[in-house]
Length: 154
Image 1 (tube, helix red, strand yellow):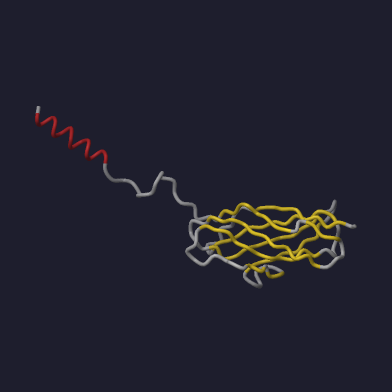
Image 2 (tube, rainbow, N blue to C red):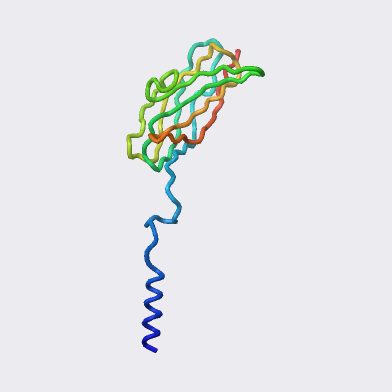
């Protein structure tokens, strides 16, 4: 009986060990960045009143901690065409430079990014879509968030 008890204990111990990666729930950590909570103010401006300076922010999560660029497209669709322009950070990334006050340094995997940009009110009145996403050093792009900016006539 002692032999069977020791054999049973040995089998139980062997079946309980190893194989894990030491990480919580066994779900691999995503290296693709994700953004949320896109906010900006103001959300409107009068047509042909010049550029409207807008302040905004997004929250981010990036398992790799290596966000390198922020992209923003401002676009207005028409029945047959569209007008658009883009911002990017760092400078020269895309069209105009997005002014980012606290770009995350390497190794930071979550937080809030604050930025400023201008909406050009001289093109057309109506609703403009503001689309934003980030990219990491491995060229993984985040989800895209969209907000609306209203350029009104009077």
